Length: 314
Image (cartoon, rainbow, N blue to C red; front, top):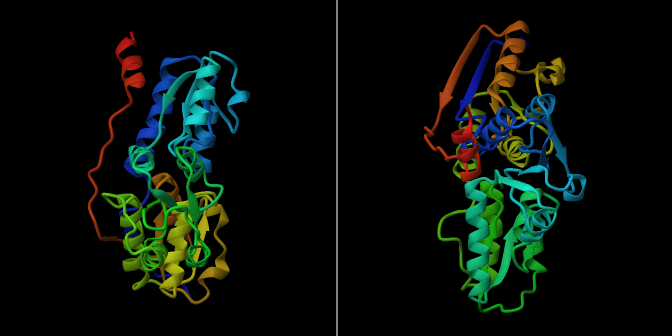
């Protein structure tokens, strides 16, 4: 069976938090001489990281790798107060690229902790965002409904939950339902923690899956939101593959596919999507169309430190 048509999910690709984080690094590289140090990958995408690395960004996984007094940009995923304090002790010039929607979760943690709640975070162990959030206060991490079944909190009558911003909507709903069943008085965030872009991209894939034979998700393996897009498609009964770019496409994926759906995680550049579409066209696709399910007009301003750098530029 030959590929005849490509359907692009919309919205896809960069979210406002990723745009802001990448632009922060670009602005700093434009204003200051390299190297500019970045604590963790600025966003989880190999193409973005490699492009910025080529311009002089140095990505590190430990603050002690950064020379005292150097410029340090915190990634979009957020950091713990301990990391922030350690950076201060090394006299680093810190620029915080944490996504404002992640910062919102941190502030919720602080508020609930001050009010004496037992805290439960729904998220994936080891993810930078989860590590940063859990550094704000003692809390329990759950990733599955089974985790909730084995959960024992300090004060079962006063529990609050929060979530990682890039989770599966459907999986999270099941976990939250289990929390509500176990702790009927559990408090939820004032506004849902899963970010608008994660929700929109997952909903777009649900719409896409009903019209295609296979789904390609452009994004890196360590991108949580990209992994979730593959899971959403698979849950709808459509094979889905996570790829960095067109070089990872395998022709056998399309043996029974006439229509291929394409989307991109929130940290994947649109240029990669274009290359994937060009590759599918070369394999025989004669139609390319977009399937729009939501409009996005979110924009986050630059942090004060970057605004000052720009203002001081000649």
